[in-house]
Structures are given as structure tokens and as C-alpha cells.
Image (tube, rainbow, N blue to C red; front, side):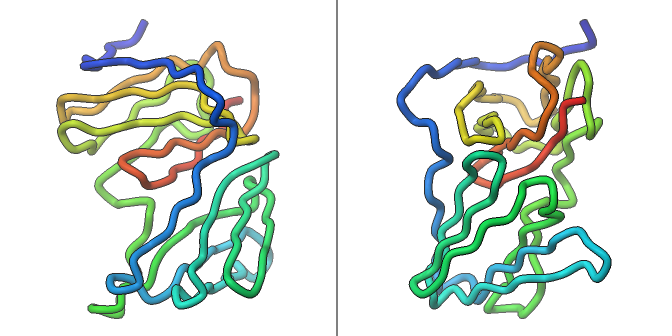
Length: 168
């Protein structure tokens, strides 16, 4: 087993939650939600926060619902989710530069580095089913065994921010 960083408390939750919980964002801090999709033209879809977008993962799809519309994208086609900051007018990506999940795709382990102290890490499968949840006390990072997982796309929710990884 590779050098595994300490995990303060490791909780495997068995609960009735089978769908990634709705997330909403404060309009005072954000102006728009941007979804970048893979493709020939690197398509961008922009959702105004005044439309109160909520998103969740279910059946290998990213669902986004606003007051007036709903959209679905296959999880494998989503390249990045970011928010246009109202105060600085700059793009702040959910895939923080300081935090990394590697290797991606992964076979045996994933290493999450750049965590802050007392980080929450939740692992969901592509259908939104909660697989595992960790509480990481130190800021050094953590290595998580994924060799037991079936091949596919997984979502990590790290301190309430989503990150995608692929198990090959």
C-alpha cells in the first residue's frame, strides 16, 4: 500500500441519500455559473445566478435546474464548472489551482493534495450514490484506495466543491 496519509476519521455512510444534494450559491458573492463542455468548440453554457441554478449528479449526468429551465449533460462531457465573481469580474474555478486529485484517470489510488486542515471529502458514483466520506484533519493531503471500485466516472465533493475523477 502506498504511503497513506493519516485520515483523522473515516466514515462510510450508509444512508438513504442516493442523489447528490442540491447546491445553491449566494447571489451576493457570485454573478453567473459557467459550465465548460468538451467538444470541437469547447462550448460554454452560462447560467445567471439570478435564475438560482441548482445542480446535482444522477445517472451519470450533471443536471442543472434554474427558475425557468433545466439542462442535462453527460458527466464525461463536463470539462469545468466555474463562477464569475461579481466583485472582481474574474473567473474562479471550482477546480482550485492549489488542490489536485491525481492520477486522473486512476487505477489503484487517488491522491488529494492541497487540502486545508479539517477537510471533508465525499465520494459519489456517477448516479449520485454516496460511496465513502472522509474527514481529513491535517492539511498534507490524503491517498485513497480506489482499486475496489468499478470502472467509471466518480465525483469527489471536497469542502463542498465538486471534482471529477475516472476509475479505469
